[in-house]
Every structure is written in structure tokens, then in C-alpha cells.
Length: 340
Image (cartoon, one colour):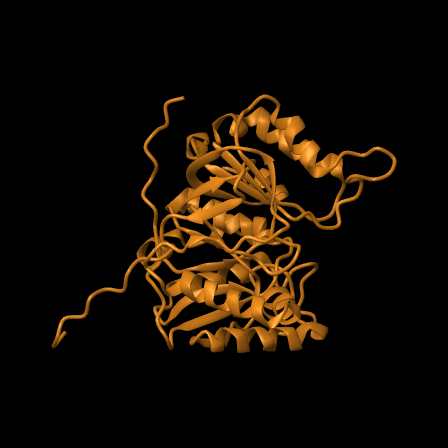
């Protein structure tokens, strides 16, 4: 296969101590019971050395249907954050089911003029994929604020929490490649092999939805890519069907590797009645496509997230169970000349 030239990546500038990070309701509402988790997330971000502010829509009890507000209101606030030069990063408070409602309202010119890290997963996967497609922006598929930094992180062992804090701070501030992500015994080789390519993915159902919009990633953007995905809820047959959609659309013929997250709350996986396991589903759909597959990696809905920056070149060795970030996710700070 002949791969086309990849588009230029749009990297945000590196954050520095004291920079402002805003926690925003980019999708679902804040329920009052989770206010302590959000407050803990703010503490975690401050421990990384950042100033933190909550966006106005992030208010307990504010809700429109299943969303924090109407999509146009969320887009208006989001665009204001994108245009505000003081705001250096935006982290979604939670996922949900709202981003599809404002994909066409995002100020992509503001992103091109001043790219910023946007952190989150689940429904936020749509932002990462669509903004990468439209602008080349590196998407920070990473923990959400309330269920992640203030929830899963708080429940993790202290050593693990310290490792994550250092990893996230390095991702946002460091201009050298991180290298190998910290592996764990849960990682599994589902099909051996090695590859290098750009990391593209998110929660599986949102990947499929994004590709159904006019903002879809062109197929050639998947040439040689390492596709990462997780899934939460639904049934095992849904996962199989989503993978079949990617097969029919040609995505699976173009990627060079796959990384699968820890599944959560998926009915019909490996049940005593003879239902397939997740590796069996994946390998069934891949067929004879001889690409490495690394499974059960900690990102997405199953707990504290390893960051998976969309668009960054990675090295995958499924047999050795390693995944390495070969490029930084941010660009160096501009050099300030004396007297300027």
C-alpha cells in the first residue's frame, strides 16, 4: 500500500507553571452529588502547578435534558474559552451525549490561531477526531475531571496516582517525547507484531458516529495509523457491528495496528452460554489482516486513563506489550528576547 503524505500536526504550546486550565461542561451536566469529586479534580490540577477556573455552565443542578445546557450555549462558552488568550488548556468535566449537537458551531479559526490542549474521553472523542480532521489539532484523549482526576485517581493507590500526575504534567509541559507508557500486567498480546504510526481513536461508538458526519476523517488519514478504542455499555454484538462498519468503510484495510482498552459494562462478553470474548470479536472481524493488536490497555471508561494523544506518532510492539509515544504532544514555548 502506498501511503499519502500526512497533514501537518497542530500542536498547542507547552503549558508552564501558573497557566490557567479551565474545567468546562462540554457535554453532560454536573450532578450535585459529584461536586466533591470536581473539587478534588481542581486540587489535582493545582498540584500539577496550574491555576484552575470553572466555566460558568459548570454549575451543579444546571441541566437541559441529558446535557449541561443547550448545544448552542455549550458551543458559545467553548468558543469563548478557545478565543481567550489567558486560557491555556480546557478539560471536560465529564462525557455525555451532546457534542454531536454543536460540531458545526465550533470556531475552528480560533483553534488554528491559538491551539490549546482539550482533555477528555468518551463523548469528547468526537471533539478530538473532528478537530484533528479539520485543523490537525492534537487531541488529548485523557481523563475527564470529575470521574477521572477527582474520582478514579482519588481511589487509585498513592504510587499510581503520583505516576499519573507526573505523566500528565509531562504531557502538557514537556517538549520531548514521553517514550514508553507505563505498562501493567493487564496488557495482552492479541496478535503479535510491531508497527509505527499516528495514534487515532476514541470510544468506538463515537468513532463510528464521527465518520458518519461531514466532518469525518478522510480515509487516507488512517493510512498506517494505530487505531485505539474502548467501549462502554451495550452488547458484545454492538462492538462486533461497529468493527464491521470500520471494515466496510475501509478503515481496517488502512491501519497498521490496533490498541484496545479495557471493556466496561458490555453484556454478552465471554458468558457461560458461549458468547465470544473481546479478543475473539476483534480477531474475527480483522480476519487475515496481519496487524499487531494490543488489548486490555488502561484508557477510556475502565479507570485511571493513560493519555492517548490523537495524531501523535507511536511505536507499538504487541508481543513485547509496549506502546511508546515518539513525539511530544505540545510545542516549545516561544523564546522571549531580552527587552521584548
